[in-house]
Length: 357
Image (cartoon, rainbow, N blue to C red; front, side, top):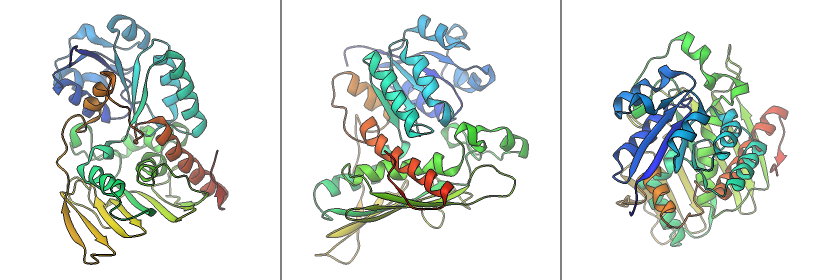
């Protein structure tokens, strides 16, 4: 690369900020020029871990943007505040990498796209599963026609709960008070397992489906005692080629990055000529085809730059690389959000609904 990119991390609602800043810290052509959050204590770990000087730490977003002039801003607000924070940053004219989900609603997602379009800068939505070699391999095999036309994507995603780990997957045991205070457990903030995790399945599922949209969606969610959000959801989407299922769960016995729970977290993709089973963090996938019905273990691809992590990829795009129609692209992510919004509506009204437009 011919230049160093200036990166700022703004809003630490989601602990994934620590992971994204680490990628920036480790990238030879990136510089963390500022971090910003209204609650200073939430920035202390990042400040210490990445040696960020005190004069690069802010509690006011406008001051941060004006003084640091970043090329790229990482945003990690609560799901229902993605639109608000996109507008605030877009006004300063910087590229934005928004941590998943896309938004708390389709209307908010569209408002984000419109706000960033006025700035002439990129908007990308990061889905951490996008960078897992198993799913990169799955997409390559689909594109090569190994399983024919995709007819069904079956997704199961989740973990013990959003407060059982922090940045860098450091384990924690949340208190009842922490759970009650966390935005993850408040409906108005975009909490719940459906909004937290279903977008992984619907957005990567759209990628595997080649951008195809479903016709209608049927969904149900649980109603845990004492909580106002779900911890388990299941949505079935009907496409012109078949059915796909997207299931989310907070409360698995183990986290998939330590020991895969049962059911395993990941995808089973079915096509007209075969199937692919790919799971989170796995080093091998299983492929079954019409010509070779015995399931074959397939080593995942060795992934290199610029597809090892989102910061690496975004800087590649800003250098002139292609912004692919992958899960980070708003066009693909919007379809994922359409399915999520349809699932929310279906669960609320307890009926099958047409795909929300």
